[in-house]
Length: 306
Image (cartoon, rainbow, N blue to C red; front, side, top):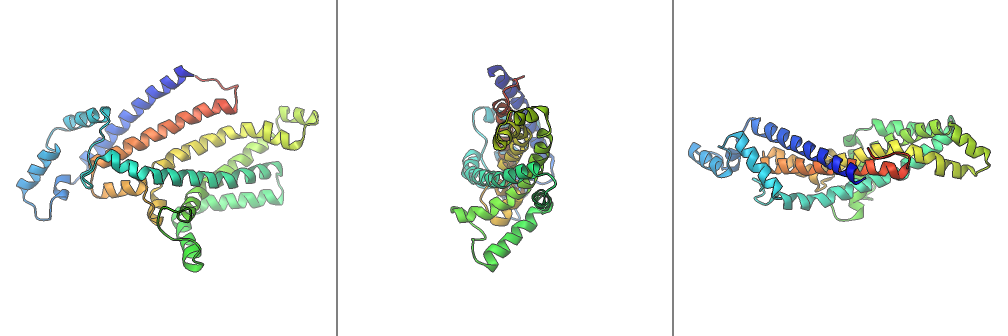
C-alpha cells in the first residue's frame, strides 16, 4: 500500500507541474497587461513600465515561471495583485465555504439517490422504478441556473421560507446544496439502479438466496458492496469538481467560495491568484482521486493495489 501511495503521489506531482505550466502560459499569453489594469485610468507608459518591472512582468516567461515554481516549493503561492494579500491566505479564507457546500450537496444527493436507486433496482419494472427513473431524468436534465433561480423564487420570494443569499447559517446552505447536488443525485440514482439490476442476477446472489438468508441481508451486505464501487468513482470525481468551486451555484446564491474567487481573479486579470487557485484545486482533485482508489479496497478486498 505504501508503494502504491508513493507511486500515485509521484504521478500527482507530474500532474501539478503540468497544470501550473499550462495555466501560466495561458494567462501570460492572453491579451492585456495586468500592470495597466492595476494603475489608474490614464496612466502613462512610464508608469506602466515601472509597475511591470516591480511585478517582474518584464522578465522572460521562463524566468517568471522559474520564480513562481521556486516560490511554490517554499510554500509561497505569491501575492494577489488585486487584494494585495498573500494568495494562500485568500484561498484558505474561501475554501471552508466551498468544502461546506460540497459535502452538504454530496450528503443530500446520496441521502436521496441511494435509497431510490436500490428500490428501483430491486423492484425493476414497478411503478416505483418508473417514478425513480423519471425523477432521475428530470434532475439530470435541469440546468443549475434554472433550478437555482426557481428555488429562490419559490422558497424565498413566494413563501419566504429561506434566505436567497448569504452565508453562515444552515438556512443559507439548503438551496445551494440542493442546486449543486441534484444532478449528482440523478446520476447516482441511475447508476445504483443499473448496478442493482446487474448484480441481483449474478450466481452468487442466487446462491445466498438459496441458503435462506433474509432478502435485506442479501441486498445490503452482498449486492450493494459491488454496486458501490462505480458509485464511489462518480462521487469522488464530483467531490473533486465541487471542491474546485461550483462557479454557477456560488454566483447565483452569493456563496463566498473558491468558484466566485476564481471568477473575480480572472476578471481582474490577477495572474498570481488565478495560478494559486488552479494549483490548489488540482492538488485537491488528485488527492480525492487517491482516496477513492484506496476506498476501492475497503469495499472489495479482492482488489489489490497496483
